[in-house]
Image 1: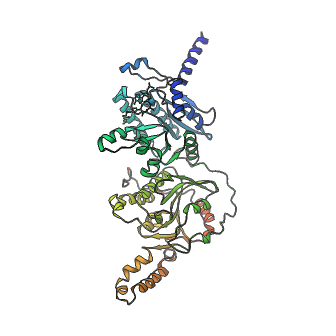
Image 2 (image 1 turned 90 degrees about the vertical axis):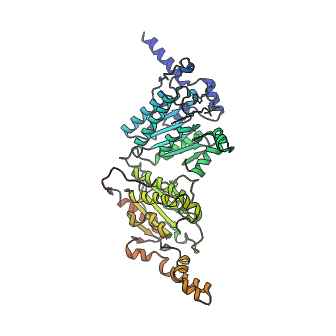
Image 3 (image 1 turned 60 degrees about the vertical axis):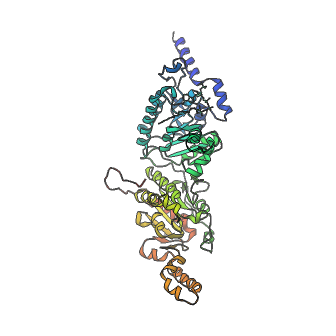
Length: 514
Ligand code: HXC
């Protein structure tokens, strides 16, 4: 009797494992995509995945759906371990109705999101879906909204990560958009609100899916995606690496690695800054020098490259890095770099990740493009994000720290814990040339040789203000340090801040200028 029942169970499970059937699995592979279950297996520690809701089916009878029942209903859900740490996963199964989202498909996703919230573990969504289950109409829309609601509720409680590994279109994009990080696979994935056909009808623009919302478009133009991968395997590897820097939830700390503290002095850094103050250098070289070897994991590498953000380890402990990049737009702050850094700072603050700012910023990028695209509100996002962040925060000024950008880039005045400067730092209201042209205008105009007078005034101004000492005298800078000491100072300073408590004023929530 029992034997028969067990056979029945095995039959059902075997059927469920086949999803939409072998021919659709083959077609998925032909499209250079892995199946929902293959993806999960690559993501989790071997044998650790426990599936929930394997036998769920849809409840629709319209349009001949009663005859088309597939166990799982287009999404594989459950929990498993990544590097020994619990994660909740949903992985859409394109072989079942194109991974489209039905009422029951949504219920399965909601169930694991609720479990993740209650048990304090990240939610990982592997997205590959034709959108709303067309046969279900508004019930599908309701299912999406149930997920969106949970995305908002889970925000800042547990990390939420979305990998886009196939189509993701229409309102469906808004669930990933509310999560903390998006990864996209090149050529096989796309995201857009309205697809190429609608675009052609409405605006007469001809564009492919890839050109409209492919991985590189969102990595470099819109900034919607944080990371891209050349295929499913690389995508899942990057997802695992990302997870290795994150805590399980907002009450937890990111996992540390063992580190035996040595002298931690750098060498040769005194020549790092070029003689000519306008010559660029690669801030990423400094980041690599400061961090533990091979620990830098850049986020958003192809977007707003004038700002570098990412995770790294310092003496084994995870920190978030926000750094101006003098190689691109001279490291100016602009709309996109402000948005990019603000979002990253918010993430780190949600999840107890200390922040290191490496500063070399000549100011905000001027121009109508910037003003009309609201550099005012967008710059304010970064200012607000730093000001509100209660995690340990340290700034090192390597060279320029001019004007409003000095204030914004985690200055002492907006709550940074320690502010260090290299002797090459220039902390002033603006560059020496611009400043002297304004304040000595009359003298320059009246002089016999205006060019020579300008040069002389510029030199005077630079000598007086283009240094870190006036700021150090006022205590705006805690210490002017030898560049070779940077790593050691940072390790000690972050270590001293490990138990930092900084309570925000009592309120419902702030109103960040979004
Ligand atoms: C039901 C769907 C489906 C959907 C695909 N399928 N999308 N079934 N609802 N939304 C089914 C197909 O009928 C097919 O079934 C199988 O999935 C694979 O689809 P193909 O078209 O053969 O695959 P492909 O050529 O790779 O094209 C994929 C696709 C295309 C680009 C996603 O299927 C497509 O355009 N689908 C419709 C997309 C759409 O308009 N969705 C609704 C958007 S509105 P068989 O049986 O042949 O295997 C929306 C609103 C969300 O999503 C709002 C949230 C607030």
